[in-house]
Length: 378
Image (cartoon, rainbow, N blue to C red):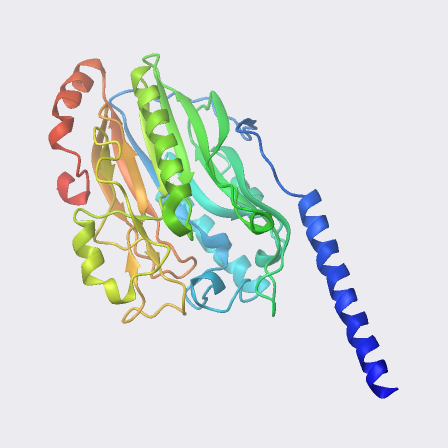
């Protein structure tokens, strides 16, 4: 009798578990975020100023790590254990510090990644709204790239509900903003908890009749085999070249999740023993006619396998910009914040939109100037 009772109890437990798992999968599948390939994006806080050629401008990219991946944090997908911020108070403090930093940098454009709307991992703080409110002189657009009703990992403390995206802020008038889906598809049911990567396009009118086209990106990490990354890069190549053919100024910027370095193979060999799985190299011929702008001397990201230790944590540069030949790089520099509020450091590019005559000269010289790093501007 005792054996039969135990068997019945075990079967009941297994059936209950199956029902719960099945119910969760059905719930997540029904609520899965499936964006269109191309979607218009609302522009909040519209501005009126028009950008001029030959005017020095500044753009800053910053992955804010949903104001939770601070120096004392790690992340379970990087080899750590954490899935949420240390506390609501810490996230609030980090976010306020990030907003104050953006205000002090006084850039004309901001590209911000991992900006949460109410999500479990950031204690349901609407970071997108607070950032826009903290920068009232900027038009704000937002592209969702992560929406999941519930992420059940890690099992001990699930990440939970996630609603997150990339936010572009512009001091100048924005004609239109558009979300373009990038390759993100993985198999069911894994895709239910994965990001739906995108490019957020912002079109800025310029007084000479052209447009400054800002393509804001946050490319894939944890992409086994690199298929998604390759498809994403191919899309960006086609897109950027089409815009240059129209005569526009093009800036691709954000978190590339690829190593940005003048000699990437040398960097990989030097750190081969601790090279993180998520970090990949860009194809050598990727948009070769464009010019890179990044600061290799100031690391823009750290690994999240443990809290930040300046003596041991792996760091490198993955955040920066790629600009068309008619955009002159004045200066690019990273801001070393010690990863105090995020697992990234911001990077600022100062640039000038060239007029027609100077654009033609730059296009002729672009072949020999593809490094485009900080060293090339000094």
